[in-house]
Length: 127
Ligand SMILES: [Zn+2]
Image (tube, rainbow, N blue to C red; front, side, top):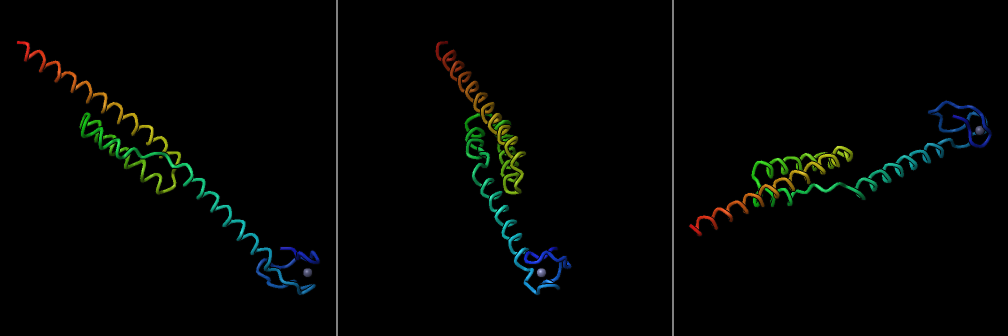
């Protein structure tokens, strides 16, 4: 590193300048502060915009809709959660979208199921 006061070259681990004896520690302190600032910025960015896990939606879709599709949505929701916790936001977002899709498929299958049961009951009662 170079001395900030006189510009003389010193070893990186030197604490004082060999020429003017001024402290050389200040510079590394600033670097450490910058690094911690950057990491907190990154963390706040992650917590600011985490993708939804749709866990409750997947449970509801498994109970009211189709069990196989709903169970798949629950597994995908769990994978989304694991990816959020490990900081893999890009992958988490992809799984979040898949979870939402399976929730919708499950609920759609559920609606079709209930409508067909309803029609069957109506047909049975008319007979
Ligand atoms: Zn110096």
